[in-house]
Image 1 (cartoon, rainbow, N blue to C red):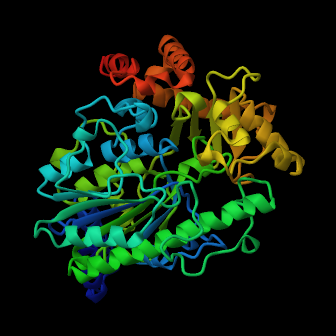
Image 2 (image 1 turned 180 degrees about the horizontal axis):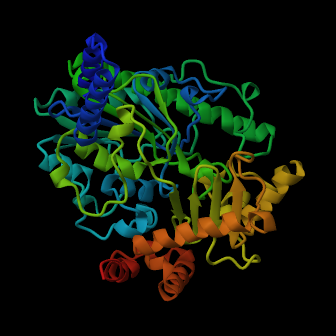
Length: 520
């Protein structure tokens, strides 16, 4: 379609019409035809292969997003060869719910995956997803790396490899070799989702010789939204960047195998992070550091190269985008909340969404915290429905106390006390979450200064709250109903002892309660 667009433009440039009104009319006809064709099918040139690359626990801390410490030349080149989305978000900043969202195209309360699969949270079952839909469209499907969404039987694939989390051993060559087997295993068009364990905790400075030259603590500063500096945090931050460098090396191996297969030019490549990094005020929260992710899409010679889009986009948009590109719109489930990114990939400026929404339950009972977020171009509102201003946010407390090895890089109280006053206030807000938090992301991108109680911002707070409540009504959010909210919260807090993990027949009650409300 890009080629068609260029062709039409070239035709226009060759037109030599003497009368001005005829020239104007011709231009209008050409542009109308171009827009019509792009709005309808857009990029489809048959059935391209689709390679979906997903990395764990990293936000846009990449060179192509302007990070000063990142060494990510492969991903930087991928961004330059296609379209990079500067403001992309996930609906939930924890692995299982995030993955369920981009696989089903539905919000967590719509698909059911309200927490980690390892804690027996699950989708409602029998929901169309990228694997089943791409298979129906005639694709050979594959999954390398973990799925981490329940029930796994609902996500069948033709090829499966490296199914464990693999957090302890991160041999990038294994992923490349597995992908090579898949690329050369069938002549059908393929859909492959490959999921890398970096940069999930534990963070590794070096694994299997990668990265060849690790970044040292004295070369970095802690992530800016952490707001605190210490030698301890610099060590974790350096190893976070080492994980990203190793990830970049692995993706380089993957793309090389794709080129060797002879299928590179026929392959649409998508790269996303599944949510933000696991430092304080990141993963598990609805702050920007948890919700904002890298997203780039490339297709050699077809998608515009070097394009940067600033629209508010969501990983919910991936499913409708892919089905549109391959010409399988007839397979689209009804009432999906996402929308196709095709016009943005085509370089068009079209009316776009005004808001993006976020949600968290903390992901497991021991770290239960219920929070919502809604943001527009400038402002962001966070709503903590169960807040009383006294009870601790269990998810925030897990970072402060280093609940387990995944939270070991959480900012300690001693470190916080040495930070500037506004950062100390932000951490108090994090630990004792108020009912409302409001941030001016233009002036305060790291969400340190809560404006919710300031009179001059009342109209902004109320406008965003109205947008959030309208979204809850439109998407039939069960937790917008006081009784369902109360029952869900009570059950989560009751199960903080994790006793359910020993019960083979355990099933969360909401999985049977919520669907009747959603579809009523």
